[in-house]
Length: 290
Length: 173
Image (cartoon, rainbow over all chains, first blue to last red):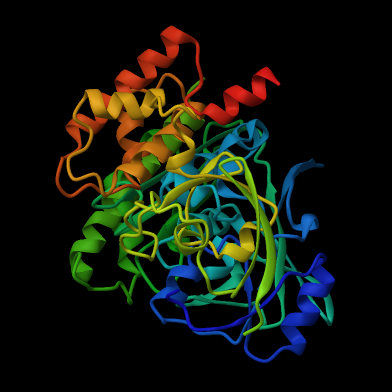
């Protein structure tokens, strides 16, 4: 028993769960626990009350809706990795999934937990940001939808209030000619990435880039988009794009790249530029290919 | 801290207990159930020594509280061999290919590989390495382990069997 003591609650509905989060002192939602439990074990976090979401069935599921795919926040990464519909409709999410932790982690870890935890080097927040997903949140004050662009606010911080629960994520399905890629560098597969990038790119009927999203992870307090590069790329011809230059430009605006045991900020930026370049090449090749 | 009543099946045996919420599943298995084959290395989700099957999926028993496993079916390394002690295909392959030395990490490897081969019966070498990345071995090294996984996959393909005895039992039910 490594964690400090806490009281355990296992509600059966999302309404009940947010009621508990609001009423109890110092309460935290427990989903798959693959980030929270190590933090409790290391005493980086201590809570008086844990509200386990395992009995809340409404938080799980994958539904294809009109032009989008809804994924319940409690759906495990393993389930997402096995889903044919996600492989087909949200390829970027499918490709990012095997990069998360290890198979034992993905058996338990959930998409909602990963996004709400908002680790700087996690894959799903970067995917959510690149695809402009909509995040459904529930609190005792009601439901609201938060756009991904407004969700991540800093280190392990999001727009969610303490008594607010992420219930589902809606991924838009990109139509037409499009390509998706995620690249990351970690010293060992499954470890936290030193730096990584997601690219989603669309090519219009005129053969020019008409949609473009580049998101970065491990390169700041939370995932972020490389908006300036994206804007420059819209309307250009794929043949003219210089992947290495795109990678370098994507790093130019970064001002809070971490330095730690694994690498200095300047090294991370070089790795980040290389990841953007690799992801760009692969995504673009898929978009322009037959 | 209020204790919580749970009911689980461990290696086919139903167990009830009243446990403190912070008791991790690995300690429940080792202390309450006396199944000390599940080893605890790092206790924060890095080393993989405590891997068990929870409803057929490999999980880290140090990152789950016993209360979260209420209602679940758990298989530990003790539940992999036949009741007469005959090793499972994966266990036998580890023995035959020098997939262990001191044996501390072995239960976690064997359990994880059992789940992995269930989902991916014909893995490439890259996929094997990827699947093993969540388990640390500090003395044998990984070559023997990779050889063991490859051999287990081949043996299962030849026999048409399943890596997990439970899964085989379910199929024949």
